Length: 162
View 1 (cartoon, rainbow, N blue to C red):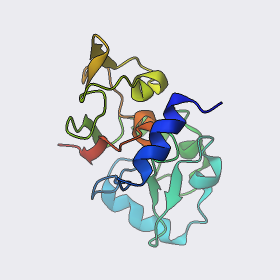
View 2: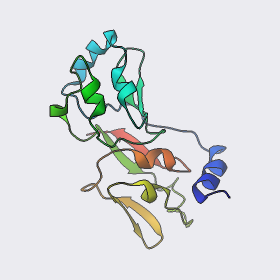
View 3: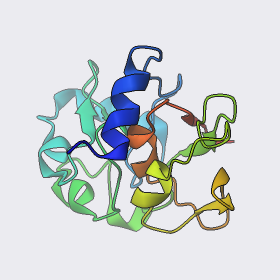
View 4: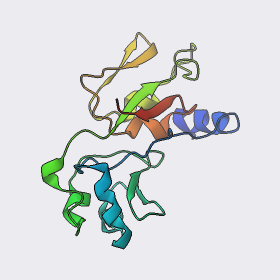
């Protein structure tokens, strides 16, 4: 039996394209962006340590989070594995992204019942007005990204953190 999320994803995939935004979303354990220059000589230990499998290594050797695969649980494993100490537990903070909902793409904002984003939100940061119109509570959201990849219409965006 096909679940609601699978149905919406299969229908929407032919009409939409996955987008994540134009900036690089990093693991939440770094101090300065410039420090990632050192990653050129690394073997990607942070990627191998990620239990959610959301860290990808860019051409320059630095890590990037890919929310199309899941989200970050802030488990500290990537920071523990970083041999060059670019990622350190002491530098732990929210992920350098802003998660938003594009109301024009969101099927729930367009009168179709869908709770895909709310179902996976570990922090219960997505609230609905009745059955429709989801909104992200910025005071609760940790920018973990779990909601991004499950949205059947790619209405949840990852934007640069201001």
